Image 1 (cartoon, rainbow, N blue to C red):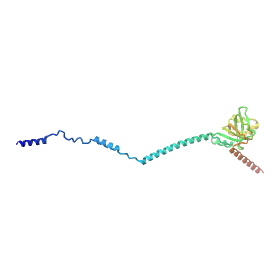
Image 2: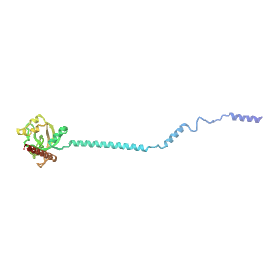
Image 3: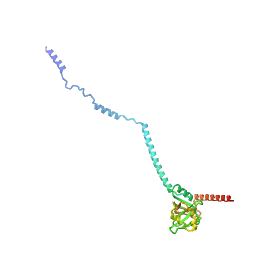
Length: 237
């Protein structure tokens, strides 16, 4: 009987005892935070894939833009320099060429004029310090006004080179004709719309000095005049 009671007590303790540290199923062995941290660290350790082709195209595009901008800057600088240089250039022209160029573009009126000093055209105006004379290429006469001392080699009938500007005639300039002979000689030059305001009269030690292009133009005009005169002579005969 005592043995049976002991057995019942053991069974009762076995089935009704409460464990002091029951297993907790609410807390997993690894928390969600630990798993997230582990996955993030793992992803960071994995190397990112680089698109080599896209990177190369990007570098090539940047390089092309750099070349284009550099070329544009250099080209713009060269154009500015050339325009400035061209504006400062002064070409040798005949009276016919100077007037044609001025009428085509009045803003370009600076020239280096070459030709012959028309005999009997030199006149010193009493009302101004300017000296007047006519430069001709045998076709076109242009009145030149110059303030200053003329070179010693300056002679009527000889070649001359003057630098200055083509300007429209004023009533005062047209009125300053000088003597009757001078008025007759300069009548053709004064009948035009423009005169030449010289800032410098150039001369060489050789009295026959004349730029090659101007000399060629005058020689061509001389031949043309001679041919016209010969044709008139032949027609009258």
